[in-house]
Length: 569
Image (tube, rainbow, N blue to C red):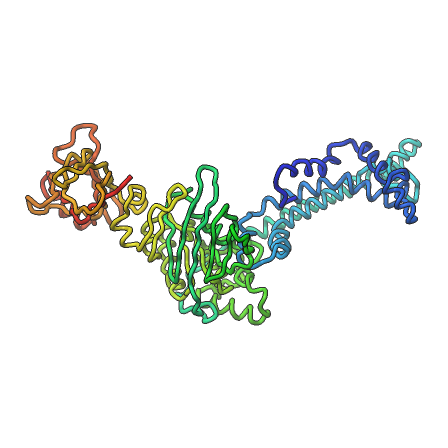
């Protein structure tokens, strides 16, 4: 039922839950129809010499059918509480569906399964109506405690009835106590091991098993219909990191999911090192477990019931135990995780968890690596420290790396090539510096960090009129006329010589201070009137700001024609 989807799920669920809401005597009546001698099943059983009605097995069948919905609903709820990303992580590490169930889903849902089983037993222990209908009341053969209580009370033997009542109450309280004890034990266990872990040693070179040379080519040209748009994305990655840059909801993570095989595209093709992983036209769709693509999820998706060592070795089940441990321990030592081998994920800091997730993905020697905003869950200080460690690790990985981020600076530090996504479409791609210098479109300019963008129109003399800034700008223009111009906030030049091209007087309207720089909001041409909006935003190092603020206003600000971004809608 956990995996069933579609229109029939509700009907199947209703049938399985029905004994919980029907009167037990009605359930017993239906059981008589199924197992009675006149029923087809009863007739077949009779031919085999098996009689169900008015037998001890009948009491077990009746109690089981009535109590089953409690176990079913509790267990299904426990399955649905397990983070599905953990199951996806297991699949990316090569685990079959059977292994995912045995080693991830069932252990994590185990407390719920146990609770459901205990509750079902408690309910079955008190079953009366269905048992009486199907099994009758034959002392020494089919008599249960509730039936014995009923018989004793009906015959006036209140002392025997009371003895049975006391016994069933004691057993029921014991069951309830068992449930509370199990929850308390889990709570104490969860609170243990929260001691902060000290920082770890610097990284060294990865073991040879992980850094062996590969033919590194990942190609994906896929399409999928999402709720609000159709995602059409193309990725070509060789050795090195390619960045998928874009705002939240643009399709970056979905692109990774399709490459990893966690979500099936509507159409297209995915190939890795010349091997087709997905081809809608050819009917090829290699399962996730067979794609050999390592994935580092945004929240890391470490298995909470396994130690660090067990997490790292999860994808190495095909290796002999000795080789499995040797590879994992070597990799963990390289990444500064050796001292954490027996810790559980709840005992790790964010940076440590991120490195464990990366080690787990690398341990299986993947042909490609997908990183889904790997630093999003870290605070700024830990992020910079972890970035350095990851950069050292990825420097020895020879396969394609696809790095998802919405942070331009992060993408610039890690990726040699960038692909910019917006509303499910690739709007720009190319080497990072070229994309930064010439993003091409307004959307791409914003996504690459440009803070000053305004509509523009080309004049007959080749200059560009920017009405929002009240000026005409000299530009270096080739090709079509731009619809907008942009200027990056850290590239302004102040106090250039009078008469320098694109130089205008400006007045300071307000400032915003950061630890190492100042953001200035400026008005061009005239001192700002009350309620006026700023024209430009400039970011200056504090040393430059200290000197500039001593100069009388208006200052002179220059927009270098070589640095003006000529943009299209």
